[in-house]
Length: 640
Image 1 (spheres, helix red, strand yellow):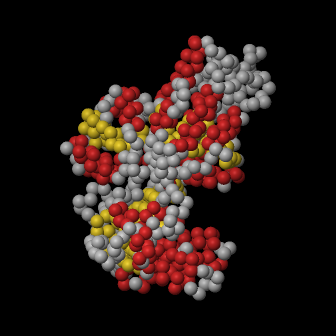
Image 2 (cartoon, one colour):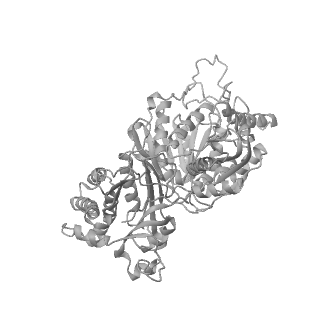
Image 3 (spheres, helix red, strand yellow):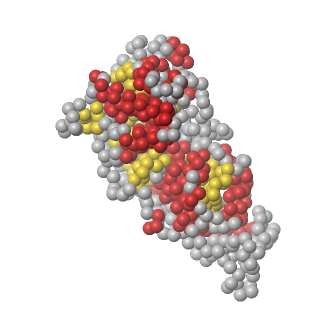
């Protein structure tokens, strides 16, 4: 077999950047050491590609590789089998180096049927390797995939390294003597055959997946044996087939010392919420209506009742927001999670929470829009909605994580800020961060600073009466009184208020003062939050300014540009309201500013409006993250 990982010297995107080492082969004459591999599993949405990719990722993490993944699946629960609309893909980039993205394009494609091949071929590097299940290339499936002729026979794949495997038949042969299995049952495990073959090719151990199979199917002997045998059959097929006698080994990455786990953005949000509740010594109440791609946060938290977590699945988004307000008023750490359409529905109740000045966190996992849009695709189009999508002057703190692991830190910070100034805080994640995975060093929560919370009592009022909207001199937060506390009875609601007492007031000066105070306490967080950091030269020709899940592509593009002698820096904004206090100074140090976004230019609009700094926009609204090559091309276009 020819080398599927030979580097392309003309590829700027890192997609084919791994190279066979000059050192002697590892362990055996037919095992070559490579720095990194990008593999894409693609098949029908019923073929288990997400499970296959997840198990491959888990094993890569266990052996110590750095990883970055990109699940890509249809919104339909079960699209028509064999069609282009039903293709589900999972791309894994695993490496011995520090990597930031799943890669611009795969080097290896495992295609389970014609539709998978047609859909994913454009995501493969020129000359890449294709492992294809030939059993599914029949007339019916070719027609469903809109192939006029069989691409395995008509020469259209010339230039690629094709490995035809009768995978369906081989898998059935391996399982045929398991009593009680139908042909349909056997075919459900063919993804494990493909996984076993991939493990053989990339010198991966089987133990982790065998353990998972036992845990998952141990109480169903026939299904357990089918999946175990399918995995082993795929591995041994690679071992005994001449075409796969050349194998590849990816050494562990040089990660900082510590205990690691694989984590997705949604998992990190869930763990971060629990950690914040522990740091604040509060019960966590998560109120949510199921919505893609935020639902996994609800699923993860529902299993953590032993950490004093209460989950409430509401009948709609408005009810979920109302329940979170009630939980916050009752003294709990209240959270609601949603995506773009749900954020729109929550807007009126979010404004009520703002006027009540109650601490809570609102997690928005952004997806493709508008309206129902593309539920399983990523986008960054809710920034202006989070900033301005409520009636009246309604400022809220807005944070945005840059990586899956950073979702933990930003979530903890969100509640820290909410408690500090008594306000709802919005966390803008996105579909790419939510579903992609990376190695995450598990923090020591006991070493983290506690979240200081105090609840007033009548003691100390000296008979002056409780003022529910009295302000803390430093933070401008109002007191958080628990209902039922004797002597602290007070009026609360959404009507305009008198400062201090919170009594209903339509006095123009009271309205002005309350608006000013709510705005000032949010703006004051700029003095509490860290300054904006910059990667690269402190001043120069170009600053690439981004936010959210675009981090990896932007940073890698800037690294590559600097390696070629360009004067380019990268700043990634985590604090979107208020902006970092030094952001104006940072912007002023560069001749030009490029703002790439997965929207129509929302951060660019805010930057230009706030700082009067002209920027160059790079917009993408395709439901897919930026490629490194797209950012590089724009940098080269700007700098000439």
